[in-house]
Length: 198
Image (cartoon, rainbow, N blue to C red; front, side, top):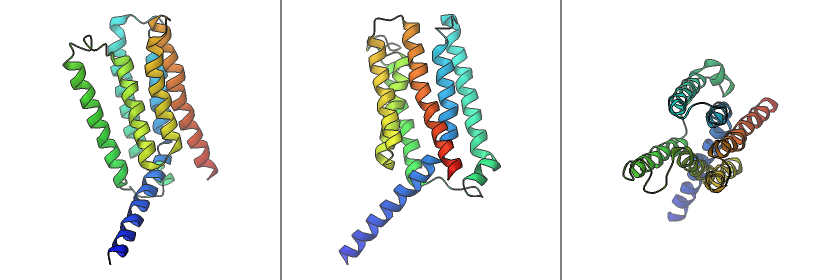
């Protein structure tokens, strides 16, 4: 009896992982949206946007990305491409999204308690991609997705290596936009191409 229950548990875990993996493949437009946001946002200093204006422009880009993400998620056309009626988000994907809330709350708390990031040397332009990289890598492990894992490790590596370079901060951030945001864009476009073939 215990063996039967264990087999059922294993089958349930596999089914949850497969549902999550299929949902991850359907996330291609979100990679494109947020990859574009990163490319533009991280290029702002290199393009000569004044330091005081970078923050508000980033907020505008994030809001635009959020609205675009909501629109794609609610779009009947996108729902039809994913199989018709409004589909419920798989359980593991829900848990993965909640893990993002925890990760970002931890970073926000750390930055707040370190005098706006100065005491620990934390800067939002490097802390945020480090957390995003960790989040993607976590998704790669949870969903057994090589794409998520490699993308997360790549973004995390960039967020650690680029600030250590002797290049000007604007060049460092431009490199994050091109290499990090570009990787997200390329991943999303690759997933879209695969979806069209399938």
